[in-house]
Each structure stands twice: as C-alpha cells, then as structure tokens.
Image (cartoon, rainbow, N blue to C red; front, side):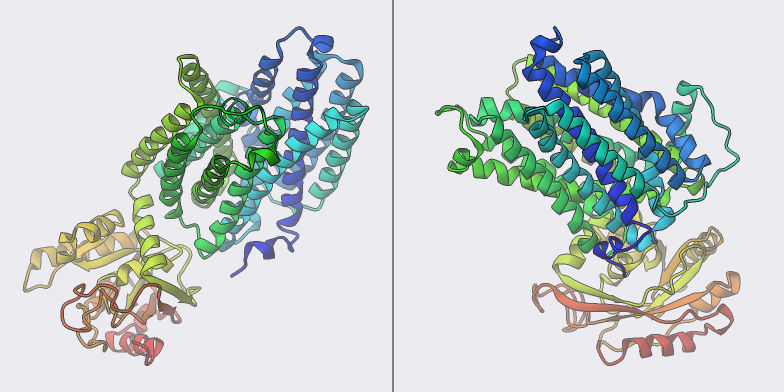
Length: 625
C-alpha cells in the first residue's frame, strides 16, 4: 500500500501538490497584503473604514464562486484538466500584474478587481485539483492524496497570511508584494506544466453560459446520490465552522486574551498546524482506505473542544496588550491553544474522508461538476455563517459565547447527517472496535473485485467477525446473518445499516430462509458484494465446522466468483466462545489484541463446492485460531 509520503515522490501527484500549494500561497499573500496596507494606509488610499476592508475583500474574493463555479465544473469535465491547470496558472501571472498596477498607482478599484480575479482563479482551479485526483491516484491513495492537499492548503494559508503581512510592512512593500507574487505565480505555472495529462471524461459536453441554470444543474448532479450530497453539506458546514473561528481570531486575541497583533499569528498558526496534523493522520488511521468512520469521530472532537474553548476563555482581561511570547506565560493561553490545536486535528479527521468519499463515489463523467457544486455550497455556507456570526455578535453575544453556539450547532448538524445516512455511524462503530479492542492486520485483499458481484466466505469465530471483515473491505458488504443477531441492540443497528440479510434454518423458519435466498439473488443481480459464514454457526472449540450447502444454492442461481477469507486470532477473545458463553469476561485478552484477516485467490463458481471452500479457508487460517 502506498503511503502519502510516497505520493510526494511521484509525478502523478507532486506537480499538482506544488501547483495547488503555490496557488493558495499567492492568494493569501496578495489578499492579506492588500488588507494590511489598506488598513494602515486607509486615509491615503480610500475613504472606506479600515474595519470594513477585510470583510469587503473577503466578500469580493468569494463572489466568483457563485458566478463561475458551474462553468468551471463544465470546463474541467470537457477538457484535459492538466491543460486547464496551465491556463489557470497563466491567468494567475496576469492577475499579479493587475495587482501590481493597483499597488503602483494606489488605485483601490484596481486592487479590488485583482481580488475578484483571484477569486476567479480559485474558482476555476477548484474542480481541476479535486476531480483530477481520482484519475491519477489509486483508490487506496485517495485518503493520502486528499490529506496532503488539505494540509498543504492550510500551510499555504498560514504562510501566505504571514508573508503578506511582512511584505506589506517592509520598506518598498508594494514592489516586494508584486515581485514575490509574480515569482510564485511563475513557479506555479512551470509546476502545472509537469502535471500528467488527465483526459476529459465528457469531451462532447456543450458548455452552457446560463449561470443560474448550470448552477442548479450541478447541484442536481450532486443530489443524485444522497451520501455525496450530504458529504458536500458536511464539507460546507466545516468551512462555515472554520471561517467563523478564523474570522474572530483578531478580535478574540485582543478583546478576550488581551494579546497584541503578534499574538493573532500564534492562534492562527496553532489552528492551522492542527488541521495539517489531523489531515496527515487520516491516512494512517484509515489504513489507506476511504474510512468515513473518522467523520463522526471528527465531529465529536470539534464539538467537545469548541465547547471547552468557550468555557476556557478568560472572563476578563487583567493586563495590558501582550505579545505572543508574553502571552505564552499565562496558563489560560496554553489551554486555549490546546483547544485550538485539537479543533484543527479533529477538523482534519472530519473533512479529509468527506472529500475522498465525494471523489470516490461520484460518476467520473460528472466529477468536476459535482466538485463545482461543492464549491458553490461551500461559498454559500461561508457567507451565511459570516452573516449569522455578525448578527449574534451585534445582538450581544461575546466571542466565547459565539464559539459555544457554533459547537452546539455542530452537534445538531452531525446528528442530522448521521441520522439520514447511518453508514457514517456504522463505520464509526466498526472503526472504534478495530482500534480499541483489536489491532487488525489485513493480508492480501487485492482479490476482492473492485466492481461487480461476488461472494465472500469466511470462518466464524466470534460475534464480531462480520465487523472485522467490514472494517477491512474496500467495498460495502451485505452479510447473510442469523436472524437472532438482529435482536442485539448495537449489532442490530450495524447489520440493518449495512443491509444485512437475515436468515434462519429451514426447520426454524422456512419462509424466512426462502426470502433470504431470494434477496441474496437480487443483491448479486445488482452487483453487490455478499458475505456468508458457511459453517452456519460460531465455533465452540476454535475449529472450523463443516461448510453447509447454502453456498451451492447461491451459486446455482448466480454463478459469481467466490473469495475465500480466514480470520486469525479471534479465538479466546471477549466475543468468542472460548469458555462456553461469549462476552462474559471483560478484557479476557486485554486491549489492542492482534488479529488478522487474510484473503485467498478467487475460486470460480463451478469449482466452489463447500468442501473446496472449506479446504481453502482452513489453509488460509493455518494453526492460528
């Protein structure tokens, strides 16, 4: 399995990563430098109040996302994305020249035009950078690729913000800003030229100039799959959540912590560092798969640490404005920084799997347009969030109280999404099991077909066998389970959410058995992945029981490939029947118990007899029960 660090050594990823990082860096260098210059030299440049300049610049920058995202999505689906990246980078060079003219002439109108064009640049590049990843990366590299893109983006935001401020305050700052911005743009262009070709998925697409119609159509593309659409809503909520925190850092530092301008950078750096670390940890914590179980984990952390930040914030300032170093001498500052870092880390857990999920499950023909729909909804949420935050602060809420309200709203949004799409909670439960009770090692799952119908057969050692297999599988699996399992509260939720098929013996409930086989046939007709435990019961002695003939009946109706698997190390654990009844003795083998799931070569339907399959599974398991 390729790790995210490996991707940085490949041409199919590194040039895109550098291009994206430099583009985000330049956006923030130019934008923040303009805001700083206009704030401190407002009387000579404009009559607009300094406190409104940042809000105005942010609004102008985000406006193109509403105007041109639909067109950007169409272009990225119709043309080679690598070529589009090069054109966008040429546009960036021209934008820097426009900004340089504004700086040289002290013309605020030209500067605002350049900010608008920077927004156009980001709007056009957004669908390219996210829709190109599934074309250049393998499925098990999507999490790592997205993690690096997100980490790089937030590092660029921090670096651009700091560099822009430094350049704005330097002697001859306007010349430095233009020169540095031009150099970054040129390097970004040459980096874009190294991006491998990414053939258009819809070359015959006709570009529509009707912005309103195409915007609505892109959103409809996203809505065809509820999971994709709600993932987009989750991503947009995170940008609303994050933008409220980032937007309040200057006022929070000054009015709550009693810090000076330099202390704002401390908060920004901590928050950004946290998101970068959380993003990079995603690949390791998800074992390279698109693990959406991390999303609920992320939302829990966002809520808890945002609430803690609200309560940990000092009630009153008892000192004069302090710089970053002096502020670090206060215990309350460390508490705030810890909360900000954890919010960033859990934010990484939340957003990276969502981006990867949207890319993985989107129809390639509409991939860029779905990303465009995501950008439109992101922009809408950020605007609404800024307005809501301004309204609440105007109504008398303090900034810590605002953080508390956002935390509670985050919990409500999370519950709403997970209630509509139980798959997120299902994966969270499975992920927690595999990362607390067990330490799972997966051996050779490459033979599971990426698409199409197949049947998985596995030995049955414990009550959580299905959860272990689900945790390791790169695809959703529909298990055929004993009907009595559905009586257990947590297991019932898991198996109903994964669309497990209840079954009973012919003696216990012949009608249910026939219904189960009919549903299995329909599922295989639809191309689903079905898993069964051919033993028909959990082992009482750790040995593999004889395989029953149900698999023969399944394959007679649907002659699909069969993938044998074996579980190792579960015998003797809390969920096994090692001493008779299972789940009677907690921590029987401690926590983080090592277990393995190993897969064998695919067996053709005409060779998949119960005896052959039992022999294959037994050989895979070996002596380790």
